[in-house]
Image 1: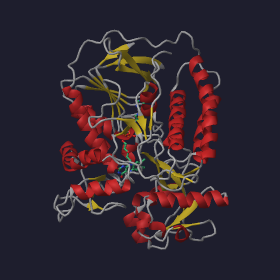
Image 2: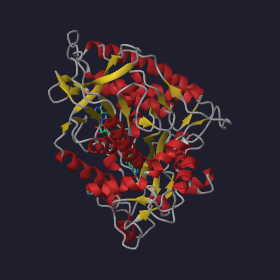
Image 3: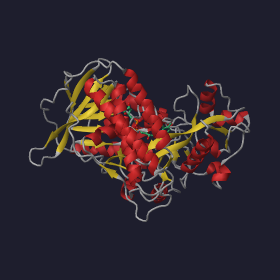
Image 4: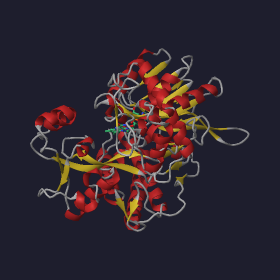
Length: 533
Ligand SMILES: Cc1cc2nc3c(=O)[nH]c(=O)nc-3n(C[C@H](O)[C@H](O)[C@H](O)COP(=O)(O)OP(=O)(O)OC[C@H]3O[C@@H](n4cnc5c(N)ncnc54)[C@H](O)[C@@H]3O)c2cc1C
């Protein structure tokens, strides 16, 4: 089955919805989401969006803070491009109907918070659930648009590529997608395809990311021959709730900002031994210290304690965290919270220019899937939602300015003649668990050449198993995600092995210092034909 559009937007988080809403309403747009519309990391964002909204603040200052966080690897031009758009992007969200927390005394009319690494108050927010406010509003707007067809529960599998007759250069004609309701694979055709599929946190055993964050867009673009960069820079959030039934719940660093202490199971405080700033050290240092203590003592988790504050204070400042922990029987007013570091943000991704254009004609990437150069070796808090907005709108403008729509020729049909229903789903489930555990143990917060080599070897074996499974059985969402997880895990290992220094989020015991002239780690595979099954 084939369906044709002008533009395919794959992913309906903040980046995807922003792009879809910013395209010319005369264009027929498919907004494809592998789950329901609002699912993705965007809806879980708590803190807010960084933007220069006060005359005491400046673009220069925001650029500088971003470059400092990026540890010598942020691209200044990209950083400036995105930061300069902050005020316009926030105004666009307000125009869409997003309600930010007001502050009548503030110049711009909204309350601004300050987060680690920012030298000014510049985080606009909607209480402690900014992502929910933004995605709910944009979801409503998307549903109102007659030109946008929403394809929920459709999983993008691979690109459908064509070849320009003269140059032999590849271009993107569309995407194969699995409609999980019918089990059928549909060929979606368009003159522009935008990958906005989010990050890859699920490649690790512990993550703050939702289930959809399996790096699909990164793996899809890489399999088609696009360059991918800086995958070694995975940001780990130091404190995610540790509980067998709690999935991906982040315990905000605002608790540490208010004096919460990290403790070992016997109640000993350990951060002062690792850094003079103790619990207020930057995220990467705190995550590394927790990882060190856990590995040294064979612990599953450590504790974060704020119970010395009055119950009133906790109820007023941290209502969402209090409520969520109570659901798991943990009363943070009286007891410490079990926590573990968790993969939080994928700084690397598909390389793009400042229009979101990738190496492949008619293929764009935006949001956490993309690598624009903004985050360098470490992401400054609250810059990611800003990047989704700025690049979503820049990409929509570039797509609008590109070639006019044309009739799609027939796309190749997905061939299922050689495959049967999978008989051993346990293999998929087992390999999922294995990839995530081996990445956590061997390619986590602290790395060594030896552990990376071991991970590479094991991933290669898993890849062979999955390729054989993929070639023999009908595809399912679990299998497609597993295939992407293994590709993305391999990209992380390859990038980490190539970086012979410790910088930003990448720390290796074999090369603890920094080299003088750093450069992004760029990987590309020779162009295969991912559309051939
Ligand atoms: C708990 C948490 C808190 C955060 N807090 C903040 C914050 O306060 N400020 C900030 O700036 N950043 C924050 N971040 C980071 C930020 O939320 C993300 O970087 C950002 O939301 C990514 O948006 P996105 O649109 O790129 O991807 P997402 O919002 O993750 O959306 C990805 C979309 O792609 C779809 N998709 C994925 N694969 C496929 C496929 N194969 N086929 C079809 N669809 C697919 C998903 O279903 C989803 O719709 C936080 C992240 C987390 C996890």
